[in-house]
Length: 424
Image (tube, rainbow, N blue to C red; front, side, top):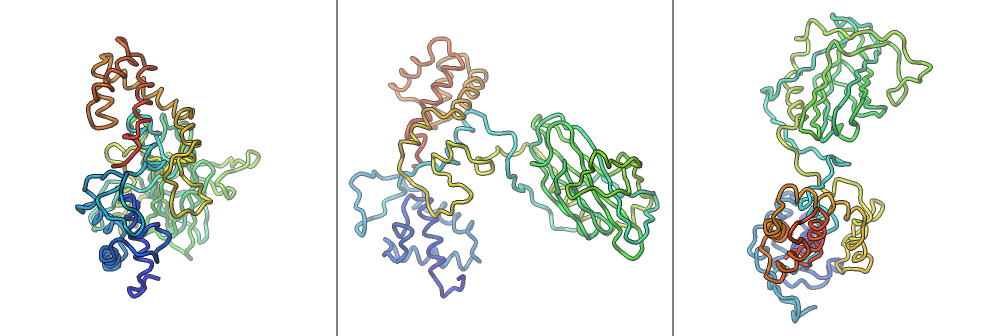
């Protein structure tokens, strides 16, 4: 499919990218690729550039978004020739997607969720050999000499409290020779080579309040030492950071938990003992740099980006605005406003809650002056000052003593303007 001589895939892909970014495909409709494009040369150039770049979609997106065509003014839609007579005069206006609209409302009202349902890794790791961070985790076992018979399997645990919602969390775990990590009764990571530490995100597994980490570790070799090392870095919603690392505060037992890292109440081990920090930490020095680089990736340095709607479960409003279910395979989304969407935009409860919270925050941060609130709302939502008629209308809504309810109503009214919901 990706052979250079097979141009269908590359042309189909760049045509869909052009359609998404500029409102109309080079070939229209996008599902009819055998239809003659309005510019065969441009379609060939973009398709060839995609193949030449090693199918780098970001490269093609960058090429289109930095072009004069993308930066051109949006022309009037009425009166434009259609079909085979179509002439490109600039990007067409297009509606925000469900996720884009949600992101815009969250940004305006400062109501984005504290954490994502599906976090993505936002940090890169230096590929050099120099340690990039200073881990605090130590190698531990049941004894400080790392003595272990072949095939020995132990269970380690640590309980701790987190005072706020977890915004970002990740673990780095390494074991000589094998380890499986469980977080609050869920399998989260596994490692089987001490020279190659394993990195996993834990943001959706950890919770505010009590948490339990359980790690089963085994000495799978015929002989030699055994050891476990793990470090968890957390960023909380209140801005604080918490580090959980293997040390002598952990406990161990020879008992084995179930497949979820848990022990039935009736079978809770009675022989939990303090873990021992191994005296000869240098035994695993060859893995120190790799472990440090992974810890850097686990560390959230500075504020996290705003949670995006694409990383949270869909809502009724998102579904009404065209976000498909995971079970649906779609190649495009409807562009026309439906009656259901209009009803949801005017009445949906989660949207009302977001405006209510946003109204209170905007009033506290920007009020109480009616004129200051008026100017800020239009600048924040539409990147322009209000017109004379708009200013009169908003002053009437806010009154001389704005309330959080009147501010929320004004925000909602501005968001309902086509200018807010269209990309031009």
